Length: 189
Ligand SMILES: Nc1nc2c(c(=O)[nH]1)N(C=O)[C@@H](CNc1ccc(C(=O)N[C@@H](CCC(=O)O)C(=O)O)cc1)CN2
Ligand SMILES: Nc1ncnc2c1ncn2[C@@H]1O[C@H](COP(=O)(O)OP(=O)(O)OP(=O)(O)O)[C@@H](O)[C@H]1O
Image 1 (cartoon, rainbow, N blue to C red):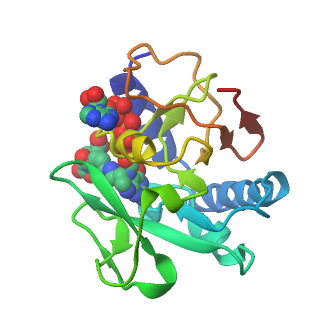
Image 2: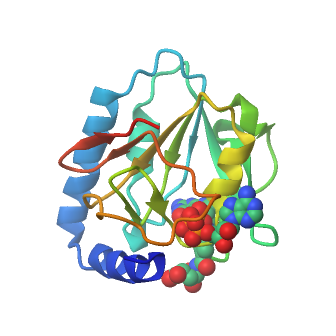
């Protein structure tokens, strides 16, 4: 399937979840995240902040339960160049941007991308090799280019993988793992 069709299909599937099933799925993903992750060497964890009414996985559940040595970094999007700047979550105000995404207001402490150790990545769908489909602006592919090569990139998904994404492009960076309510998928890249 092509990214455009995948986006339409999975946006619709995501919408059709009941609030109760969505809540249960988020709890299962959170539980798996903590069961599978070795957080001992993680200092800076970068996480998207969810658009909950669009049924993006509730990453707040993970953020709230992190051990105290971990500092959380949240992205602020710049739609002019599809870039993101991370800010220390504990030191920033949040607002909702024009796309309904909660994000840092721009005060507080910016954190350089090279400081990040683990990234929790939003997605609409992923394939058997760990490639992802997002909203289609390439924010995360640009961000990954600025990160160290040894970081862990972990996607959260309500659904299992699609077989193949036909129109991958040279900028697409595969994830190291994706957590779904039923399974943890790890990819050797
Ligand atoms: N919570 C969250 N934060 C995130 C992302 C995300 O997927 N989820 N992003 C991941 O990259 C970046 C924002 N990416 C975005 C890319 C495109 C559109 C956009 O064009 N939205 C239109 C059309 C959406 C559609 O195709 O249906 C809209 O909302 O009307 C919004 C956000 C950075 N922060
Ligand atoms: N580092 C980059 N420099 C320039 N263009 C890029 C870069 N990374 C991605 N792009 C472009 O951005 C566009 C977004 O592509 P893609 O369909 O892969 O988005 P996505 O991964 O689904 O979205 P998102 O990361 O925003 O959730 C593509 O046209 C791609 O060529």
